[in-house]
Amino acid sequence: MKFASPLLPGRLVRRWNRFLCEVTLDNGETVRAHCPNPGAMLGLKDPGMRVWVEPNDDPRRKLRYGWRLVDLGGGHWAGIDTAVPNRVVGEALRARAVPELAAYDTVRPEVAYGTRSRVDFLLRGDGLPDAYVEVKNVHLRRTEDWAEFPDCVTERGAKHLRELVGMVEQGHRAVMLYLVQRTDCARLRMAADLDPGYARAFEQAADAGVEMICHDTVIDTCGVSLGAALPVVR
View 1 (cartoon, rainbow, N blue to C red):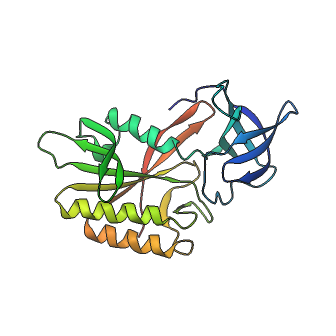
View 2 (view 1 turned 45 degrees about the horizontal axis):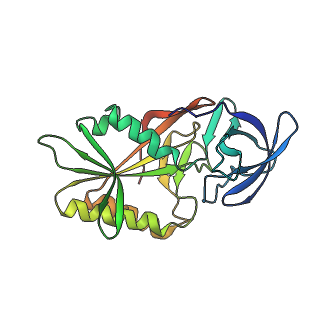
View 3 (view 1 turned 90 degrees about the vertical axis):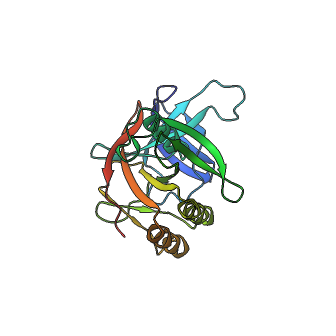
């Protein structure tokens, strides 16, 4: 996935709320930018952090900039846009570049299933069970090289796990794909202290046959793409 416009570097002044931040660009101009992330963003929203924003000339948008990356230092990056994982995974699925799902040749996004839900991707292939794939954005790191999910309470996320269990019970394949949108992690675990309800739903879903897979990402100022598989530790 390539960014539509070249990114501009700056320093985060503050995140005003879930959808608005203020950044001082390297040219000295201070701008307001859209923050495409409603989560807690622990460790990624501290004033003074090196960030990169994407400019736009779309008259339909209220803000001329969108926050895209945090420079973590040491050559590492974090992507903060929660819409990016679906785009990255969608591209990878269509290119049959997700090894665990490469046998499928039909990829349909946003298909209704379960109870008033839409699965991120429904995969089909000759002689294969339908595969229902949900994608989750991961960018929390607190200790060592652990990526953790979620970074705040997510009842919606727990619901998705229950919906996937329902697909397994109907004889389909169900996959939860965690995409780690930062480059300094080597394994994934659930943040049970931040959302014990999600951690319980995760364990129940895994026991019921939902496949838990994780991939990291390759990130730079040009774009974000699928990286290597990472272990999911229960």
